[in-house]
Length: 264
Image 1: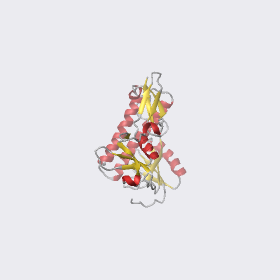
Image 2 (image 1 turned 90 degrees about the horizontal axis):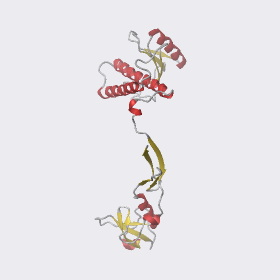
Image 3 (image 1 turned 90 degrees about the vertical axis):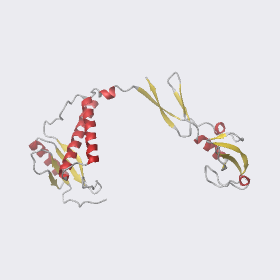
Image 4 (image 1 turned 45 degrees about the horizontal axis):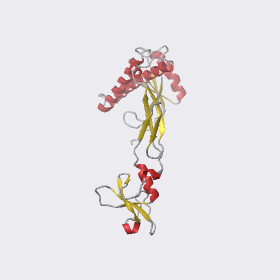
């Protein structure tokens, strides 16, 4: 990553009024920058962006280490468009996101200052719309139409119940062991298996192993008895049972949880 030269003054304002010739003005402290931002916002009758520089910020040609950490609006300023229509605000937010994404993908033609100003204007509009929508909804305003039409659901989370190992691990020949088939139980060394398929630890001398293989495969795998149970549990299907009283139960592998959505 290319690191840009640290500026002498790490704080600055960006004046966004169209008739302002000088766009960026640097300051030594955050307090001086913020005070100047308020003065210029009133003077220009336009929003002023507040930025600061850090070597931890993106150092690409567009950002060069600068990042926005606020803005100052002129006295009495208001976001253009309806402020009590959540659907219109949501549409405005989506449009701003789409335009920002399009600009990032295609690149903005012109010099870097023009590209920066265009992106900042889009971000500025996005932030303003989000702020107004948040305030509207926080004060009890109506939801956007797309949200209010969604299905009302009750979300209930249930932890899976781990069945007893003896219920899911049978060691007789022909029994299912996850995706494998049990061949039987024999001395591990005599069967030619030396490490457990599940825990990878070696079998002790004359230790019994649960032997299994995948269907249509010749390779034989050995499991410690306890490991065979863990292996079988790992391959248990997740089963959700929803009862008439709207309660639910989930069974499946250990430490499994799912969210059950019950329609109203």
